[in-house]
Image (cartoon, rainbow, N blue to C red; front, side, top):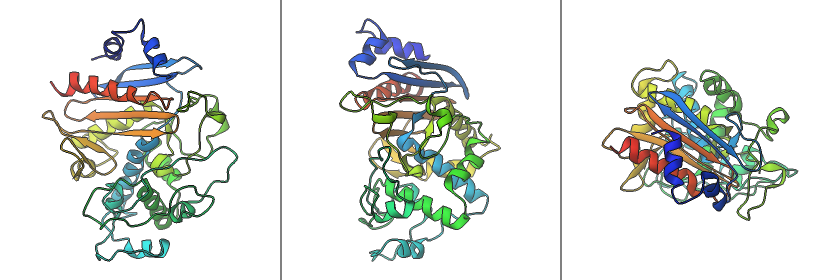
Length: 349
């Protein structure tokens, strides 16, 4: 199924696809389609500004997949151990820390949301506001605007989605490796996968600011300065494009079948097969949401920041995938509709 066929199906009751976007108060859209492990088609539409395949969107929680892959690469290099018990280090960061169960908390637990922490997501910061450090975010201290990270469930018992857990994981690996996550992502993910339009920075560099998709709020108004800032890089702070995420998805699909020089098959399988069930239809691995299918493992992630929504979906057995990103709070159902039609046509047959 080509992108134009999905657009045609969505637009059946409209004069044009642009009319559909306007009805959903969505003014910027970017899509990349993967067929046979290659980017076969792209679509960009900008109704309020110019948008092309190099225009950056906030990835929101899709950032978690990139961070998790970075952690897996560091694990392969022997610089960290995803199965190591970090309880002692966490006790020094979070006071008080009530882990009465005595169960260990590892990086793997933090990345598959079974560590038991609160803080689902983050609201971001306005331009001109003081940015908090990772420690201030974890401790809920000003200028952080999020709650203090607390252990609210027994570790390794239930799935409890925690963006805060990802920030904690970022802090732990930066302390252990004496190098920032931003540097590791550039070295281990962006450079080898040629993700030239991906970056982690606060705020986004001036040289690319003119090529970002300016976000629109739930009030159908443009956000001041185009976006809110997310210092929670591992959980929500990635700027990227659908084509760059497609490159990442392609390499993950190759790794799952043992055809990648970037990530081992065992690491890739651990990310998608070591999953905990979150519903009858879905589970969560290490940095990926997993969907059940008769045609193989379907993995991906969604993302929702203020003014941005997106989804990505990949299947190694089919060697196909789709990434959709928009710059509107109100049009949050658009990526889901694209992926549902794509999944029905490609994965469910």
